[in-house]
Image: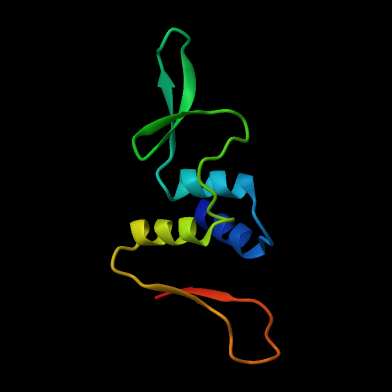
Length: 102
């Protein structure tokens, strides 16, 4: 399975916020990267959109799986000109909401 195929399968299987999945989405799709900072104590730090953050294990600054706003911001960045929507099905037997990208 390719990296994107596996990431898609993990997204589809997610049932709630997932910090590991957020991290992997960030590195695979959002352009996050680790950079070495040569300040008095050389160390690896996280770069997001040109801003440098301390890379603490498990630290997250963007939660794609918890915030629909962050998820749609990523869609707008990766698919400029595409639309998106969130809604609730009209059928009474459906519980929950849906999100679509078009």
